[in-house]
Length: 202
Image (tube, rainbow, N blue to C red):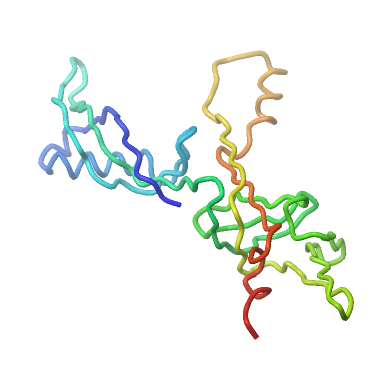
């Protein structure tokens, strides 16, 4: 679920921070810049793990701050495909079941990846697994707040960085296209996956 990613960045330290240890100032600046941000094709940055190398610091004319090239490792949330995670149902819609991990909310289990046969209950706004038994069909509801075990089957990164000036029409279209920078697609269409309450031994 979490990986260590090696990164490089140039960190600017303002003069009033010079009295502190350089490593402490750099760690604070890196966390300010990256923590809780999605880096394109990398994942959701959580926190600094360690600094592996500091290059020379430079002060440029007209700027009293120091600029240091830093090599560091960062803890990143980026589950691998087919990894099984446990989250909580945040809500249901026609698009599928929306799942949250607490610190990451952009997880969708589409209708075709649910336990089949499944139907969407418009009145309750929940998905239902119509579980067949010898005694007949039982409706198993996927209620909000329930814990759910799912397999990660796909991921999507969208570049949401700002673009240069363009015509009004083009920028409106781009604004509509741009959405969530990092989303995961899950599946529960196999035994053992789905609500934890479905699989508890009674």
